[in-house]
Length: 353
Image 1 (spheres, helix red, strand yellow):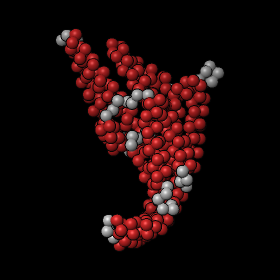
Image 2 (image 1 turned 120 degrees about the vertical axis):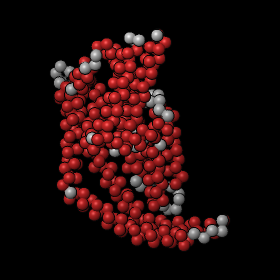
Image 3 (image 1 turned 45 degrees about the vertical axis):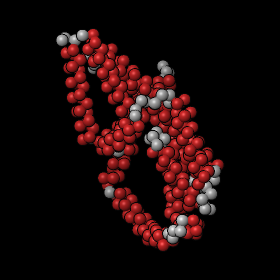
């Protein structure tokens, strides 16, 4: 009886704490996004800071160096990739009516001869609808951007996020070891061995996953950008980099990049000559990423069923938006490790009794 009481008390407190954290996250989801991103970046970059820190090179200076390096990478990425994507998207919209005309000239005779179908009227209606709505859609987008930029609340929110993330990231990175030690010291002494074991397992899994996935994103960005550029896609480099950056979302990232590349290939023309090379590039990249690159750089998967992966992405995305998607898989994996260890402890206690 006495051996089960502490475990039951721990279990009840754990359930209550988990429910309370979920309610708090839901209530403060809009405010937590900068902190979530800062914590995630600090966790990934902490090993770099630890290696740079020496007696003559303090942790504050190492953290500042990592912050400046990361900021430079992100700013360069935004200044290069976003304008390229915007330019290609504008070009695609401008050429879309001509592409529909080419598609009609190519497909209508073939369908009439082969399947005895006449879709010329449907394609003409689709073209007229796109031409009519393109102007209104562009005007609506410009109006939305003007209203957003004119709104003081929007500007304050953007400025708050841009300023808060690097500040929180710097202090977390500088004091990471002290923060971890303070949290560990708050754990009762009789439970520290169990907490240390569980935390070590979580850190091993998350460290392997997050840092390995970051390398995978870089490698796949280089691959897709190179492959799409080689096959002759005009916007192959920005689409390839975007696809590589989205591979951390299972299936969704590759599918998004593939759709963008196919649409761009159709607009670029002539005809459908680029569709097969683009498809081969994505199929080969997906196979390489799933069978060679990710197993070697990340190691074993985090052990989540595909249904759980999709559910966790949707649930965390609902709570925290885009940054919720970033932490969905690591957080779910950590919760799964905790549940498994608690279950093992309860089973062991039951067998001992």
